[in-house]
Image 1 (cartoon, one colour):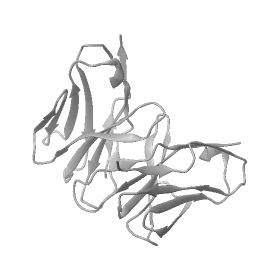
Image 2 (image 1 turned 90 degrees about the vertical axis):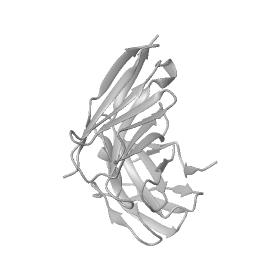
Image 3 (image 1 turned 135 degrees about the horizontal axis):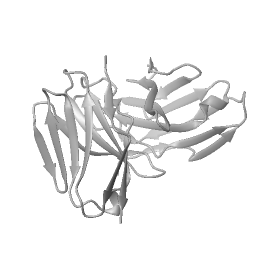
Length: 111
Length: 113
């Protein structure tokens, strides 16, 4: 069945890199996503990666995908206090299937 | 600017009341979703719809129903609210096709007393 796992909490110092990890079980995933939820708000798409890619970089964000191990990570370089939020990993099995979300990782950035 | 709008940010209702949560999107999206979010449980899918007048059960449909009479509007209905339905409710929409992004509303925090 489908399952997406993430650790629930991560704490880093301002200026350090953050790495948020995610594992998924369905090898037929087509797209994998990272969403960010700031306090009191809905989720916003941060970035996504197609399953035939290994890496995607977008400014301070780097997504790494290891299909063999079904492992996805999000690296945030030079983490700022504004990066404090809950980060959700999600997988898509096909174009019209609801995304399967992990439970979210709460990132706390210490000044 | 694309938008998914949920009618209420906060709502307080009494046990047994019928509750309507409204969601409107302005992106002409075919697909719309209702989730609830609870601490430690993440997002759980309640119902979704791929087209007008169509609905599909998600993972936790019990105690809920939905209505999609127009493409832009997707309503979540609690026929008889109970205290265990106190939660943050999130609406989302997306177009059809692989890789389409999911856009979320800001959420409705519902408290059932």
